[in-house]
Amino acid sequence: MSDDGVYHYKVWAADNLVYGPVDLMTLIQWVEDQRVVSGTWLHTEQENTWRQAKDIPELYQFFHTGNTTTFFKKKSDAGNAYTADEVRQFKIFNALSNAQLDQFFRFCEYVECAPGEVLIKKGDPGDAIFFLLSGELRARLIVGLQDTTVGAIVAGEFFGEMAMFTHSPRSADVVVGTNSRLLRLSAESFLLMIRELSNLAGPILYAIAQVMARRIADSNKNLHREVASGFVWR
Image (cartoon, rainbow, N blue to C red):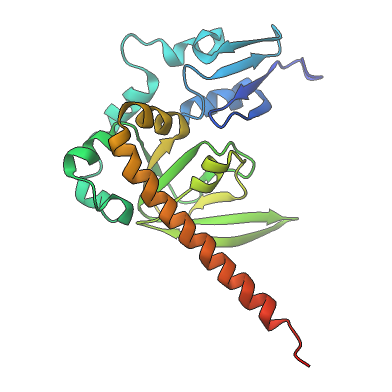
C-alpha cells in the first residue's frame, strides 16, 4: 500500500513487459480501453500475488456480464459505423476481399474521439495499432511547459505499430485535432488472429512490414542528408 493508503497493481501486458504500479482508476481505464482484457495477468499489491483480470473482484463487473463482455457490447452499440470501401483507403488492405475484411473487423474495436482528447499518452503500453478512418491527429511531446507537435496523422494512415512490435512504451502523446474515427487492433487480438486465421494475418503482417521498412529507409535517407550537409569538404 502506498503512503496515501491506495493499493496498486502491475500489469503483465501482451508485449511481455510489466507496467505499473498503477492505481485502480487507471487500471479500470485500461480495461475500458482494451489494454487489459479478461486473461491479462495482474499483480495485486494487496495480496502480493498474480491473478487474471477476470478474477480481480474490483474488475469482475467488466468481464462477467452474461454472454456479453464490455468489449463486445461497445462494438455492438457502435453499430455498422464503417464499411469495407472506407477501410480500403489503407493500401495494406487493398489485396483483401470483402469477406476477409469482415473477418478482420471482428478483431478490431471501433473508436470515436472528439477534438482535444488525448488518445495515447507518452509512456503508455505499446499494445495496439490504430487505423485512422477519418479526422486528424497529431503526435506531440511536452518539453518543459512547451507543447511541440512532432508529426501529423491523417485519414488513411495507421500508427502505433512500431511500439507494438518492439514491445516498447509509447514515445509521444497522440492528440485529437478534429472529430476522428479509428479502428484499434490490440496486440492480444492480433495474436489471436494469427492463431485462428493465419491466412488473413499473413498478408496484413507483410503489408505492415513493407510500410515500416519504407519509413525506416526514409529516416535513413534523411539522416544521411543531415550528416552530409554538416560535413566540411577540404
